[in-house]
Length: 94
Image (cartoon, rainbow, N blue to C red; front, side, top):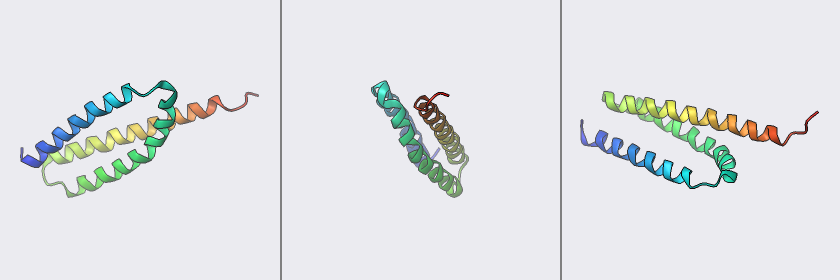
């Protein structure tokens, strides 16, 4: 593995630990609105990882890019599902 791929792996591991730590300290009242706002951010992440995969030269970069696309897509879809559930709670019942 070359140095740039190793740096990408270190960065992903660091982001995972930081993300878990940040989400763990968010109060539950704020979690749903923050999830809605994260949808736009993860849309940009998906586009960026597709671009990175297009310029990748080795297999490890393609695999990491594909994983970023899949995980970003899951997060966007999950965010929309959570937002839809939240909005359903505020609708009047018939």
